Image (tube, rainbow, N blue to C red; front, side):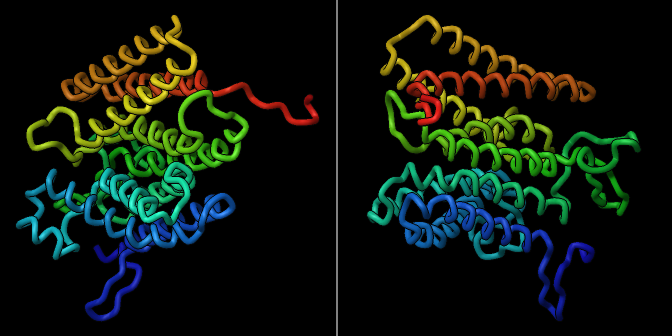
Length: 336
């Protein structure tokens, strides 16, 4: 679409969405570098950058091809013609994870957990800009049609042109995600610099900022991916999307991690059981809301409101479990 072209000369075109994606990578890297350099080897991030970029590109493309094979002529075409199709963000997370582990395996960093922590706030900022880039193409649209003119504007709705050339207003899924991820980036930075005063009773000292990112990012994806009509599904499953499945497993994985260390540090206590039961109940209600919203097209507000509440409760339960593993806050000299 010509209105989304930033630079056009002859047969060469650069789109605004592409510029924002490049800015997302730059912002992610330099924020992570600013956070990591005072506590780690800055050279490790420079080695990580090309490896992480290539792996993220290939894996996110591979996942999108698997879920949307109809958009490509073949697997070879998916990796030879990048003007077609799209990408899946879970592939970026997987690529980054593999790149960090590879850098650590090469002994270029002193701690994989510390590098993950430094990358987490930048990941939230980078993902935010990637989501914002969708405003400059036809991908920032949900399956919820906004008919009330009072809400046919950002941050609620985004316009896109249908095949007939008519402007249609749909829920601005990616723009809402952009706002949430900006907030998440700020929360992660605060957590990263504050949690140094909370040593752990059990488990590694590093990696908790990255786990918090995984927890909160996954919670947003469970809800917002449901609002999209172009979600990526497993070929054998059409009920919940691949992103929702991976997000739910990620939240569960973080809970299991802190539960194991909580029991190891404190022993099995009564408070563990209501936390686990509350988590299971939240998962069950969220799943039921997903079922209802697919069966009743006019229940969006109720279902997504309840689903959001359940995801927030899951995050709160995991955070409480994390606190049970923390030692008491050390007082500052002025407080002693």
